[in-house]
Length: 138
Picture 1 (tube, rainbow, N blue to C red):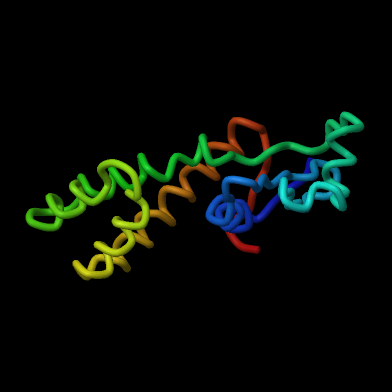
Picture 2 (picture 1 turned 135 degrees about the vertical axis):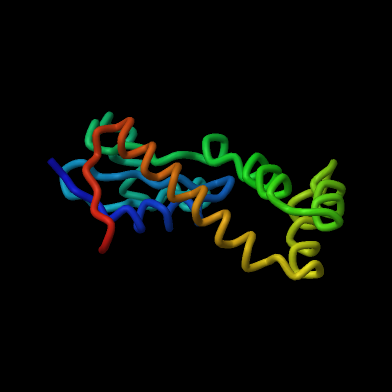
């Protein structure tokens, strides 16, 4: 059975974008990056097209759900920060406004710690659901 460093999974979750996907190679334990932007020259795409069952996708943006993480963080804040951030995450441009507001309100470090903890919890849950053994240190 392959074993991975949980922090590697956490880092991959934190770097996943709209055009990106990470996969765990169940044979080697390596994390492989795939991007729609570079699909033509990607070994991962070839393996996926060939039906390689050794590639296990890590959580995608839908599963990561950064908006829900932001909303949960807002709920942890006291007034008036809570109210300012709650307004910031409404409507289009919520992510940009949120980033601007956490800096302006002086809670950026608290946010990044909260986000890292959320990604860690997601990584552990993903490993458990997929029967992937992990270590705490790389």
